[in-house]
Image 1 (cartoon, rainbow, N blue to C red):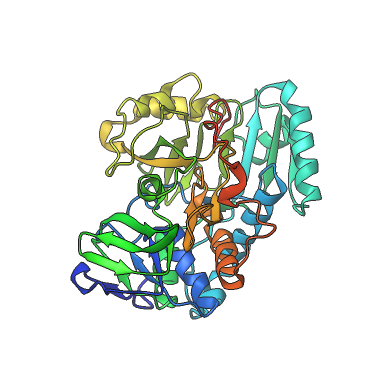
Image 2 (cartoon, helix red, strand yellow):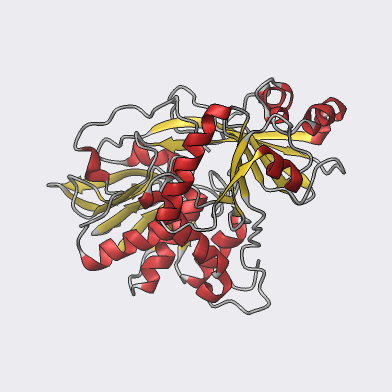
Length: 404
């Protein structure tokens, strides 16, 4: 979308000082600058890559859902979805604008285990108490009536039709443009300089930038850049794109195997497949090298996407190597799988906006609004996403919990 022009600037033009520096030009950093602008707070963005939104953001599945289990997560994601639903209006774009091409074909969590039904019922009850009155609890027959290509073994599911996916590159471009924020590209931040427990600025490959306020929104690199220890583990996350094929139902929802976590959705005449499997904590890196065996695992494995959608097993045998591609990024996992939003516990002037645990596309608008309110008001009261919530107790993420 080139309706507006992003203020991209080279590293050689990096200023020597700024009021607020946002580290990271992915969707989280861009949304941060956008919401700060709404509060009348000017900032600059520094991005290590050659353009905005081309690393972790680009490697995502671009999905957005409000079907979470915790009230604060539900509220965050519902607010973000509302922002995306009214994106053109929010950004002051023409009525003819495509916005973020929000596709609301729904999110379906399905199980083949009858023992899961009570948990599904409880989850739907909690979601409805949190305001999601349109979440549906379905039995296997209703699932197959709506989506005949799904397995006869499905016995229970939850569904919400307003959930779906966006084109994240459109969101990044439009928010960066309408924030009227200068974005300095190819700027590698080497260190956040502090003195006496206070932020002084950032040291980069293009020199030092003095700043009284720094927002750390660097995704997987946030942990390395933070002067304080962050309770974040990095997991590699794969994504497979399958070429156009008439066997792929383009009217389907995001379909998630609640028993294994494997999932897929239609993608521009093609399909996008993903499986957020826990991995050993890794170092931040770019690019992230994918495991070539992941294609077979998700397409042909016993617990892959063919378990709930049998047509995939037949289609998988017809696909040639040129019909599939695999890429990978990194999840920033916190112990409770919720983001770190707010002031750093021990460094005045440093704010965290990271640790989304795979939900950055979903949560960044509401998360950025929360952070902008904190910065504008000067207090962090009532913020359940505060980085200080761990109080030094930072157990590793629960690797047994399926993350989607």
